[in-house]
Image 1: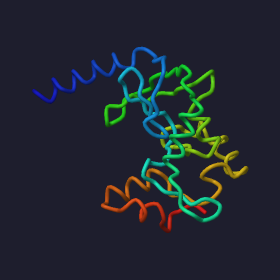
Image 2: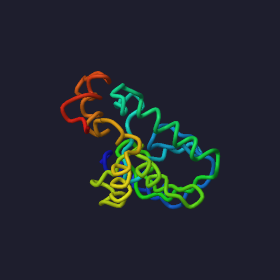
Image 3: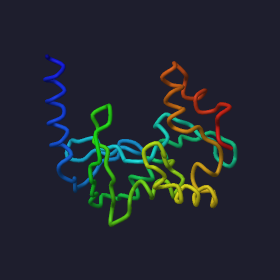
Image 4: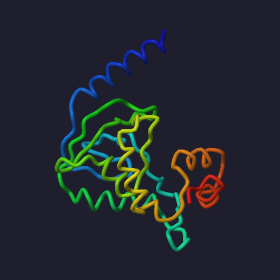
Length: 173
């Protein structure tokens, strides 16, 4: 009975949380997460490297690619108003949304600049062409090697260390 009541309350709250779009100044939490009006917003359809994740640049040296994604996103937003249209809630209670600044889709911008990957499991390929262009022109992650963020997180959950999880046999050259 209690589970049913909790599920019902969550369903009601999620429909309220998804009813309106968010517009305002956003804080960048990481390369694919914003906070606006006290609400965590996960960008829909993409996955950016985690803050602790390391990638290798064209010089083969490691750099904090997750931190770079967050910093570059923050610089692109540049305190301009962000418009987010909610799509769903994720398992962590974050609002999943498509967000834009001055009409530019932030997910598309991140992928096109090689700062995040199209996550076809969720995007159904919406950002596929932007990713192909980033790869073709050697933008961001595509300059060197990286581990997909979803594989990095799985490695960390299995008690891996950031440096070991960032470099493995699954790294993309």
